[in-house]
Length: 537
Image (cartoon, rainbow, N blue to C red; front, side, top):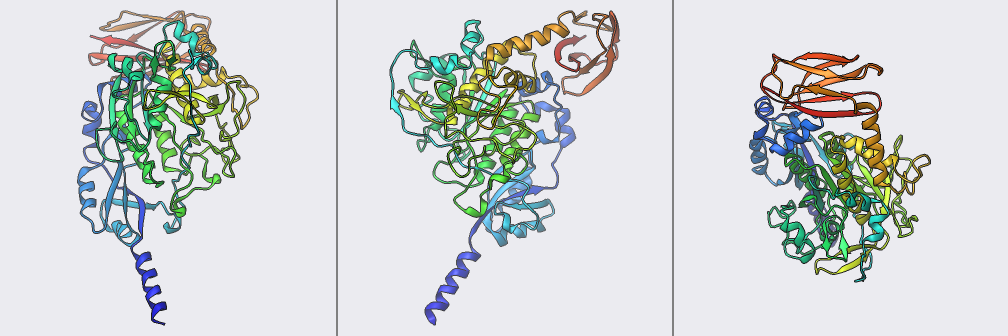
């Protein structure tokens, strides 16, 4: 009897003190209006410029979380603060169920969402999926190893035209970047000043290259930025890169979703143009936190909703579809399930579907997953020892295409992220007959460029305006035989200051009341848009 009582007591103790993860959603932020009116206090100039170029307003989601609330949470009994999100105005905490539940009594706490959905009184509003796995590697030193994976998406034609990603900034969110700051394959990147450093959100350190528990990020980065003369060329060798560690390779816990969102917010603040993430979340070490395939609808997982916000902020997000195609899970996981991101499946060197590549499912209603595919079967990468190897996984098809899209975007810089994604899909091999294995198929990025230029030429080649700079009147010249075009002007804060229709041979816009500074004109018709800049004196 004593043994049974002891066992019951231990069970009670274990249950009572089990650590849980939860998101604490806060009621408000401080100095919102002041911060938005002075965007340099919360964003970099590059971030402000990117938002202006794509007519994206700076809003309260760009304002940081109230630090006094974070400090207060850190003083609460049994509570450990793990991560924060300005986009969600939320804090990821760890503690017992009781201690976390007690936080609702704090005046600045609006709601609590446990990662273990059974502890929530309402159904979970956010959730996750499993990491992409890396398979066996083989050493390969033959000349031109990347030729197939580059030519497959026709990015080599862009490179010949000197579109190599220059001017595009990419944030790589992954699990480890050992030796990126020293190895020869990234020497060209460093010499050109294109390795912009980064941050380790897991260990909270700027020494992002010190973590040696995983070389996954190093390999992912190599497919875009790696360069070994006559042997290996990434798909965007002249783009600029930030590297952020958000994945803890030693465990699976939903806090990694929160690290990811933090890193995406940091990327947004830095003015990053693109994010590549070769990570996915489906199941966790604590099964109570795990998702089901039915949850993969872009609306459940915290990371997927965060990825959608990143797109709203003007970032083009490229995500690996996952390596669950041959498992019972099968479907594209989070954050690749977001309808707003570009999810990349995998094919082999012959362009045929590889069995491990995750598939679209009935959970993804009204949109196609994966979006497109690139080489993920026996793709060539460079490991942390500067050796060229072959790996399987959509972990590599994603950055191969991400780099290719960076080179494409350099060629069509006036296009918005959503427009770039649309042309990538339209250029793909089975655009008219997509399926759940290859999505829209293998993109042809040279074709995507031509589609974009043809659209732009068709509608806007005869458009002009003058003078620039302007003091009082801006003269708009436009063909008389076209339907009215929406004409919008935005200021440097992304605020719309004029909206009207233009039609006929010319139109005069009075800008005499505008404050001196830089403004952006955006033309919109049913099929395309174009953005240009002018200066008001």
